[in-house]
Length: 316
Image 1 (cartoon, rainbow, N blue to C red):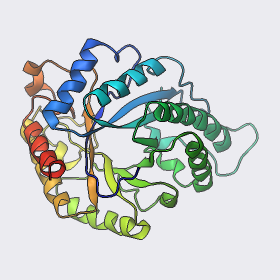
Image 2: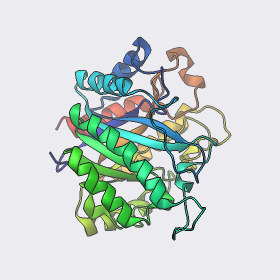
Image 3: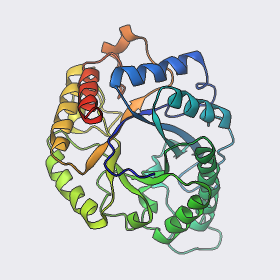
């Protein structure tokens, strides 16, 4: 299977994937609403394993709060029952709240210091575990990492990991690089699809798309935005990646952002879609949508914009 000429009209479901919040009636209703409200044809099922700090080298993915294997399999089956194609997206995060992009170690191994080699060993075990689940459950795509900016320079270790994943998983492989990093990853050739987090300011889409286009042409690979979106909050359209930005709830801000993003991407035929951020497993009540200032589009004026745009792309 490849992504040639296929449009990914996707939404990310389930993040952060905390144990006990999946595989229940509320989670099932959430996924059903995601599909019907947005018209999605794909979903990225996203969940986190937690390492203690950015310098920790153990990723205990089998422990709470990470969802169980049974919960992951339930989510995949549920998505497929709704006619959705699935990208399984295991993510590593830090318990101390540091963003995963700052996971980092010395370039050279030093005795008594944490090492890239130890981290990659643990990370590989984590990724291979869920790659095997993606294979057995028929996931169409698997994402080997998300926004691990400081690790992007470790090309040899990423190439080794990709080779190991291909031994157990035979679908489409991608890596979700962070915004502004598309041209810093040197190992796109080892993957099937280029994907990134498209949290670009409302007024900066054209310039960023020009930059990304050069990367896509250089590698001649399919491309889509594995994440993209904007909180429904005043000021967020100018800095959509800042989930902590202070502001009043604003459906209009989110709607305007989506209109600008879709308008800019419309003329770029190489942009093969989005896995919009995001849709939680435990959804807020519809009557609270106007006061919700997060990324989810449920009950907000951005939702019909998304459904109309996706329908125009997937029903040709």
